[in-house]
Amino acid sequence: MADTPRRSVLRDHPSVLWFMALLGVFTLAVSILAEGFGLGVISTSLVKVLGMTLCLCLLAVAMDVVWGYCGILSLGHFAFFGLGGYAIGMWLMYARTEILVRESLAAGTIPPTEAEVAEATAAQIFGVVGSSELPAIWSFAHSLPAQLALVVLVPGLLALVFGWLAFRSRVTGVYLSILTQAMTLALALHLFQNDSGLRGNNGLSGLQNIPGALDVPQSVIAMWFFWASALALGLGYLAFAWVVSGKFGSVIRAIRDNEARVRFLGYNVEGYKLFVFTLTAVIAGIAGALYYPQAGIINPAQVAPIASIYLAVWVAIGGRGRLYGAVIGAAVVSLLSSWFTGGGAPNIDLGFYRIVWTDWWQVILGLGFVLVTLFFPRGIGGLFDWLVRKQ
Image (cartoon, rainbow, N blue to C red; front, side, top):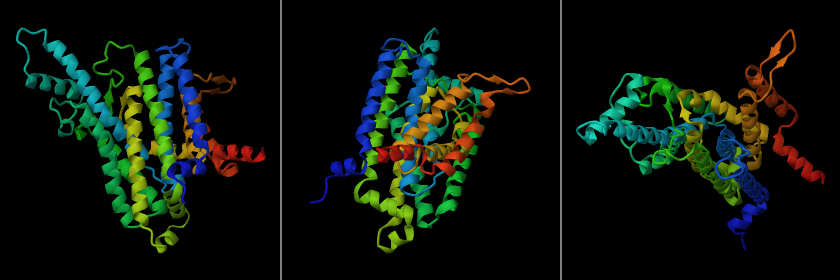
């Protein structure tokens, strides 16, 4: 009798139970030590950094599935991440601004009409780009359920259309990577324009202020998002572990290793690739929707192609083809980046030269990528595998 999906997942990925246990312990420890509900040892800003790191780990796991398991080096998954952030950011900014506008207009002698509130809200949001009208893409910004649906639909539909066009044309290898990067660049350039409907270079700001919870301390809101990020990472890890297990996982790994042979055996290679590409794009959008309310702002620079290249570096450093390797790579690089660029690392004065880590961090990251590629091609996760075999 064939193994059940659950047994297959645990057999193929014994790290799942370890990962879930460690994630649970980490979440509990942060909850106990944080300012929101715990002892106050961990600051609210650090809780937000940790929550954002969990979101980046989920994004990295999605990238690992599409690249490490299916062999599609996508340089556009950070674009899907950003689209999820824009979708939820539109509701956050509109709803918060509408509350402030209603409070301001309520002080007048005559109660405002809904049309006046809508016009004043649009003017408040888009005055920075010289407009006072609400763009068509903001038609559902007042509805949280609609924007939550767009968090999934917009990245998913873009990935579905792009993937269908690319895979049916049998574009593979470096050419596919270039196409995904071109898609990301085109999206970023469009978002930089003031007439994009998303405030151009200004982006969306004030996303940390949750409508309906404006009186709730940021320490508490930070914990809400931290818990949501931990839950999303746990569920996403389980879902992807199931996807890459069993027959389906064997097929996508075979596509990675020898696509022509898999096609010769009668499998619908394009269908498998399209499913993985679209699914990972949707998960990336969900991760972005959790990340940017913790960051507080999103702008087109964060959707630029360089961000997707960084994502590939994280997965490579952690060890592609290992779900936990992607988590390790994203967590290590993200936290080190926050430490080096956020003023945590003290600058070093050599007398003849002053080392400023904010200037040298990208050099360190690039050097680390080169060293890992040359000496540890399986990444940090490969070191764990080696240590386990040595026992």
